[in-house]
Image (cartoon, rainbow, N blue to C red; front, top):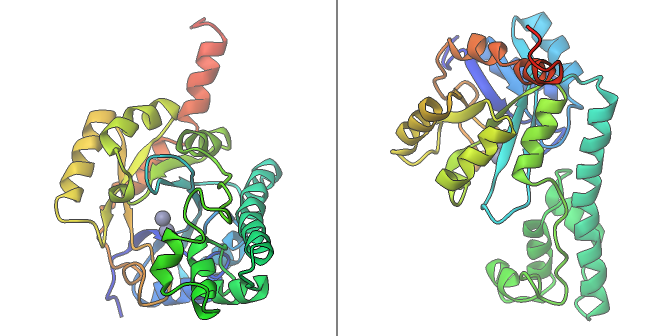
Length: 290
Ligand SMILES: [Zn+2]
Ligand SMILES: [Zn+2]
């Protein structure tokens, strides 16, 4: 039964905020006709080995990947990193730092809220996050449940608003650092769902200078004109148009597995970018001897 398209370069498992174990995710993808799939859990490659093993059994080529969230004034900038090595210890060190900071920030905000007389428990916030990376939305829900704010939304305007007493600044990579991290570890970076970026046209040349190699062009919930915008940017900056479902396994986020058409030439084009930066750096280092 093939009801999906064969290539899906953006999926999530329970190793971050998806709903299925990596094996089940690959099984579900295979059942829909997916043959090439990137597992791109947020800030981790922890599911890669399991997904690859499942893929070998089911005829799905799994590309070990991650999706990096970043902190900046540019809106939501997420960077996909393809062809990363799950055994790269130095990369894992950086990813662990990102994961710990994200959880630690919410812990600090819980401590501040308790000190300010708005008791919430970290356990409850973690339960709301269902094992995913902790964020302010989970805290807002806990504050609403505890009756400290009139609504979920109002938490963001009051107790945990940017600059409020209980607010803690986010710590993390900038968009440029995220691109550079992927390149430094031999991966191929692509800008995820570009419609969430604020100031895309201005940010693009900076990301490209940092080593960006792709732009997520085929994406289910893009506004209609966004695919054309992305294709134009891909041509202007010599980027590979990538795409995927952003499947999480819950109804409220992403398309079904294999639910977004991605052209087959995407895979060789992405492979051609592997190590290109490293080679360019080496050429520079030897001073153009050839
Ligand atoms: Zn994302
Ligand atoms: Zn995603």
